[in-house]
Image: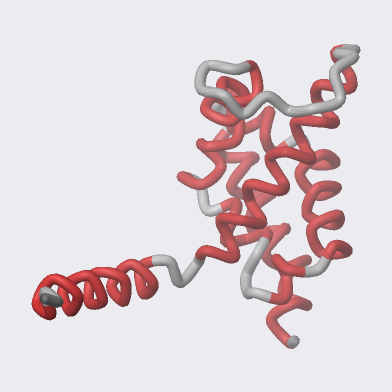
Length: 134
């Protein structure tokens, strides 16, 4: 026999989860940007491996926790990806990667230079405003 109440509660839970994941495209773009930035960072260190280790406790996970996760606390992901078109095209993600690298925003937030970081974030919002017109 089918437990309709359990099925309906699962359906309601799934709908609630989907409404909470409204910015899923932004988090996916941020994850992609983290991997790209890490590849660039690791390339400077001279690591020979071509694959990113996603296991807990790996160098990549420590890098994300220490350098990239704090960017979300300062609204960097919202500035880089103001809407879905800004997060779904390869050109837009490449531009976001260059904005992070050129401004050294990751290093500024990591070091605690919040005043300069906030100014850079405001400038990034202005540069990425072109995606709001799409």
